[in-house]
Image (cartoon, rainbow, N blue to C red):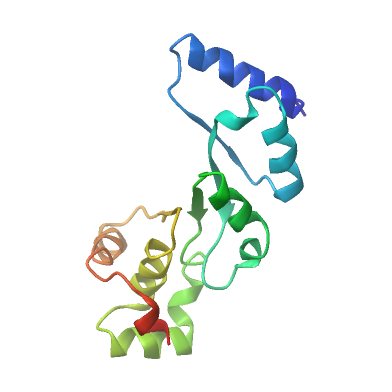
Amino acid sequence: AVPLGETGEAFAQLKQAGRIRHWGVSHLDISEMRGLWSLPGGQGVQANQLLYNLTRRGIEFDLLPWQRLRGIPTMAYSPIEQGRLAGNRRLADFSKRHGMTPAQSALAWLAAQPDVIAIPKTGNRKPLQENFDSLPHPLHAAHLG
């Protein structure tokens, strides 16, 4: 409920005072990001946390390119679609061919995207290890073709 202008100014003051190093936003769409960017202090935004994964790719049309042009990374939450991607038959087939689990493929796909940071969530050791094990499997265009 706080106007973006006040938020941007407050973050700029906190940064100037040495209280924070960087700040980001969550769930801002293209019009909100443009509005924030145009406000005093708005160009200090360092990330936008968004729902982005293999099945939720709407941001690729306008928001993601806009942010990339300005060097604003996307923090992709729910990168495995709350576990639902693990049951996707096409992803499972792809993953098997490349020696990965579906969750690892989903994370590797995000890791291959420029300016995207995946933030998977788990409270269990086994999925945490599976997430970690996706790191040696970067995907590139040859895998996806």
